[in-house]
Length: 136
Image (cartoon, rainbow, N blue to C red; front, side, top):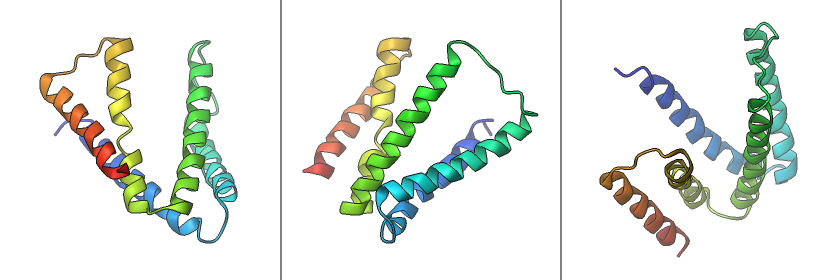
């Protein structure tokens, strides 16, 4: 078995739950309050990770701002997701937002020169078509 398969499966399960639980959460609190408590949970988990690094994370002048920008984008996307599920069906919204790898693959091809096979291009096209079907 590939060394990446098990962690990828764990991410699949956790992200599946991550996409579902907010629909229940926003039935009780507004999206901004939900985001605050999500961020608090992330911070607490971050402290556990920091402890596992013996409170000495690796630092690099380019990595630090990129990682922080990534965090801002993730939290802002999470807030947008919370507003969406507060107003619409989680079954459609989670499927639509789960197509974000289409953008990732396109950016990786354009800016990092990562190869995309004809079969993968077909998948991207079908993903874009799925977006049209979901929102249409």
